Image 1 (spheres, chains in turn blue, red):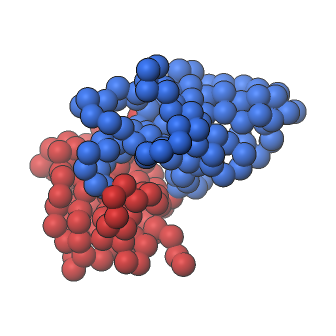
Image 2: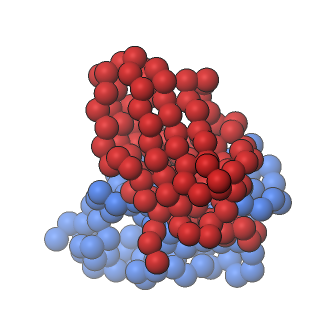
Length: 115
Length: 114
């Protein structure tokens, strides 16, 4: 069984400030980890994913996340927030032992950027 | 290349009525998934098709939900009869048949049952 916990349903940061969205996961098998973003009235778009290899993963729009197995975490960061980053962000996990497995999502974090 | 499309974008129906949602995956994607987000909660998996076959339907809430994928192309999700708790956003996603290929999501169908 797998689960995801996203700490903070709402996060507000000032434009230009560091963005940190937290994600902790639970998985009985090695995980694949994902961050998706949903802009208003759009579908979910993949920001980045960790499957194997380097634990620091870089994604689109300047975001990155680090897989920390010992902490069961996959926090999302961006050094400098931009107004266009305002959206809802979802962390997700799937089982690495099998191919094309379903995603298990967290409850989402809505990011607000303060001008 | 066209992305995943879903129809309708919104649907408002009364309790007891039937609604059919449609998903057109990206061309060539054999994997097709349905997910649902009830307001304020997490996005939950409903089922997974590989081509026309149901690979995993462990997330289907009950037998009022029927999913089909004709000829391994588009998919429909029928809710009959609809209940109030079925309200939410229904997402479709598709992916290629390589190990943990990215799932590409559609914009969702917002269903409101009154």
